[in-house]
Image 1 (cartoon, helix red, strand yellow):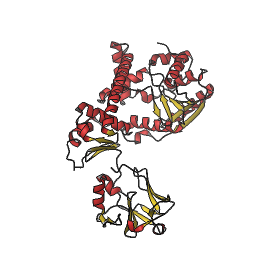
Image 2: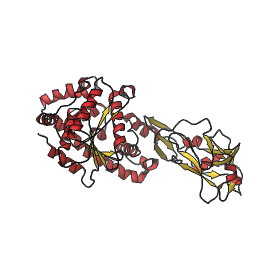
Image 3: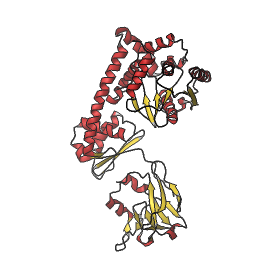
Image 4: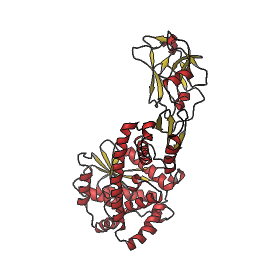
Length: 441
């Protein structure tokens, strides 16, 4: 198979059909693959607004020289060029491969504006490596589908138009056009899993099955189709279970174990959370579903957690620790942050009833529950224990100690944006607004 600029443009036209790209942002490492991608795009008449973006991890003593090579090559093509240096990946968690990829894509995301397309030079061999890597990790259909050709990315899209192109066709293009590129010696270090597959395993497989990369790519495409069907089925099930962040347990139990796992994977993904390891997925089925209705079981993994309350499973990002100190002083016209994932609280005038402004002007302290709090919310009713009110209202237990309580000295004026003490109401008054509030029920 050969590769040329026309093939690239045909693929880009297919990927962007109905959604024209405003600007082409090329992920340009300086290696042969991204060099060919940038050159083939630049010499065409299809794309006019092109910018090459180089991310320097600073992991090699020659990285500055590589950056200069990239800058010079972009200049010869008369395309825009930007570079950014990111922190050393080996100091980050989850290993250098994963860390470098995460840092790189975070940097690319900062360049993407609405309507932009980020182009990556992943090709057929990369797809084969990814499939084998995910097989070794015990991945499910979504992982075995490999690298996608198009996906949302920041404010734009990420496109991989060379996924069907073999690596040797890309190198042949580079030689034909007399291109020069950067050879990163770390690509020869087989301590890294992907390099081990590329340098040791795939050549052996290709010696026995010459078209192995093409076959693996085709398998990934077929698994991708199956994965889409599983997503469709999960979406059908979700319509009967509620919403991704809150799933009804009674109906979930009526599904087979296979469909339970499928819909839970889908719910986690739709909530924008990291996928659960297989052990955690089985734990959700085996421990959370059969738990007592009054129990509060919890299953966690990096970046996500699932809790149960009454007849619902709550899929959510990890909550911060319960605050032991006051959150701060609140006065009209200001807001107080409650911490990561908990939003912020403000006092606003909306013409309706609310906290008496005379109470607020001297400042209101935001505190958290210590136990024994009481409040009277009905002029015809008695003073009530806050614990009882929260139970009757069905507030999830993990949010009860995280509710912002508004105090004037030791007098409880309001409980978040739920209740205001009747004896400090005024009309017009100040309404408590809780922005980016987590789910309470």
